[in-house]
Image 1 (cartoon, helix red, strand yellow):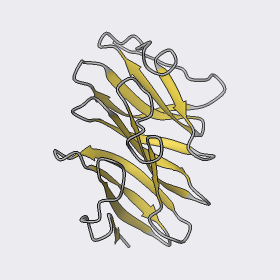
Image 2 (cartoon, helix red, strand yellow; image 1 turned 30 degrees about the horizontal axis):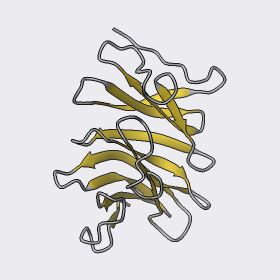
Image 3 (tube, one colour; image 1 turned 90 degrees about the vertical axis):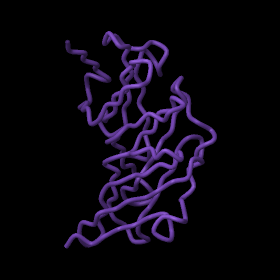
Image 4 (cartoon, helix red, strand yellow; image 1 turned 45 degrees about the horizontal axis):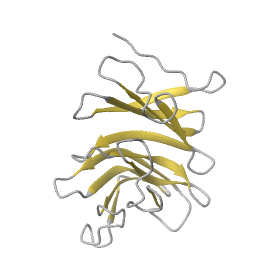
Length: 176
């Protein structure tokens, strides 16, 4: 009843979130060393050889990235959220893959959107990805500037910020 996948024996691997596709396949996300990592398993727990390379893939986003959440859209596309190195700090990232694990070219820049919540350097982390019935994507997490803030960003189905959400597509609330 247990499936174990090693990405690299020289790096620390961890699992953060799973989602089950409509066909029963299981998508798992986390990190390998300092890169976002994804794996997909068939319903019986064996690696899905049609996903990435041998059922797994590593997606470096900047010099350091961690995947924390995954959701499956009704059309089978895979949406991953986490934190990745931006220009000088950690920023929200949302990655969308087609069901065959290729980058979705209709979303952001070749499937990837990186969102900085503040102009000043800080650390922003997506901790939960939600797919709304209208196809919009809600990324929820935290932002740290001088203290921790609750953060939420809503994206249109093409990866642009939804300007109807909180006036600019993003919201942060000082938690003290």
